[in-house]
Length: 392
Image (cartoon, rainbow, N blue to C red; front, side, top):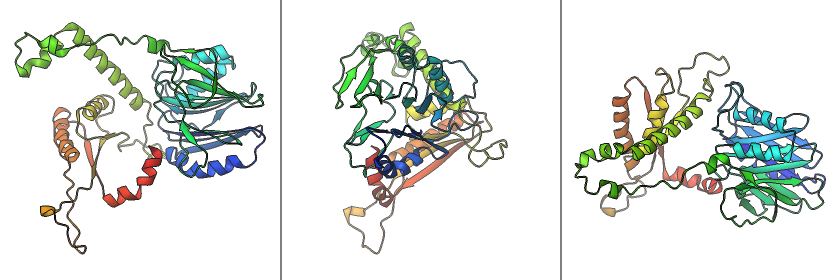
């Protein structure tokens, strides 16, 4: 998770960009505490990037730039690619952008093969264009606010920004041409073969971006499991084995596990091998470098088991279990104000988490599973409620 911020001014800077940035800079730094960079271009464009180091052999300060391009990127790319394995996604993507030489057709082709959740801002200093957008599913945040002075594009803005803010529709890659008097908004739309969703932004549609990886997904396959089981006389404890004996079902299940495994592997393998304490000396790090939000449910348990495949046995894995305060009031009566009511932290997620922890320890006895119990009081929740609402 990184923070990206871009202000595009209609005229030379008037100071509005600094005022808006001051309202959201602390939120951007929370998203990227490890590195921060800033770039001003032609007194019209301000770029700021904050980086949470999760990939690559070294942190990658943003914006990444050369004589022509400057890139802000927040995301994960899941396709096969050439280049050093220790490269971050940002460095790899920047090299591909440089190779396009800013040609519109080549840029569209590059954007079309990006597979994974992302948001980005790209400045082409030669063509004097600013591109911005996010993946076709809108999985990473990107907000936009328009004022009389210009347009703001940012991962987060906060409640102090006066301009009307909306979430950038994930309809394609937008761009603005600094040479145009009115700073019109253009878009290369994702070619998702669906009706274009209405946008609160007035945009000029350009040639679409093809998404070959999306069009290759077979969405026609579906099963009615009740029909598959009808007349089978299968015992209840053998239902899953029976379904897996059906080739079409088995193939889909294997494909799902393969894709999940690939996704988990890429997130883990590209993660730095050092925690914050061990990073300066680059000593062998025995501390956990992976944490999993863990309620004990099936989803997080599968992720934990898949993660176990790619992390050395000597490295612990943190299972982060969150419980919110549950106050016990016997017989529904309120306690006197001088006597605080007892707190019961054994909420359902805490109970299932402990139970599933025992199962993980049984299945993977060589792994050290750190079950981290995080207790959130009502007071803490109320103190942060406004901040949470800003993020949501």
